[in-house]
Image 1: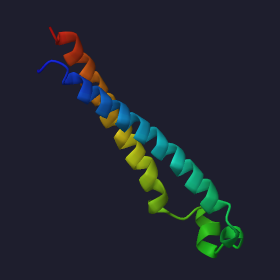
Image 2: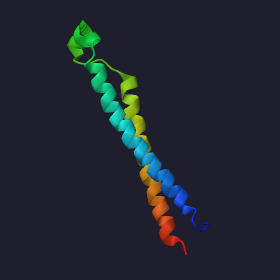
Image 3: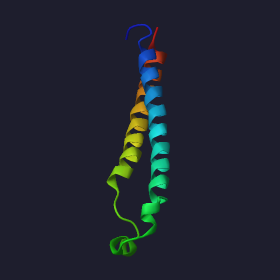
Length: 87
């Protein structure tokens, strides 16, 4: 690997880790904001029976955050390996 090109991988890994953490916290905020809204004070029958209806768009931030975290950690590991192997 070219001298110093491992730094790009380390920076990208750090960026993806920070992005993943931000997405996970954004998911918590959006979930709390949605479920505490005034519109949900009157529950319908399906929600009462199942105790929660599916909100896939609320899970998108969480899933994207975890994927970003995994990609970032893998990039950081690869960057450290290349850094150690650099002459």
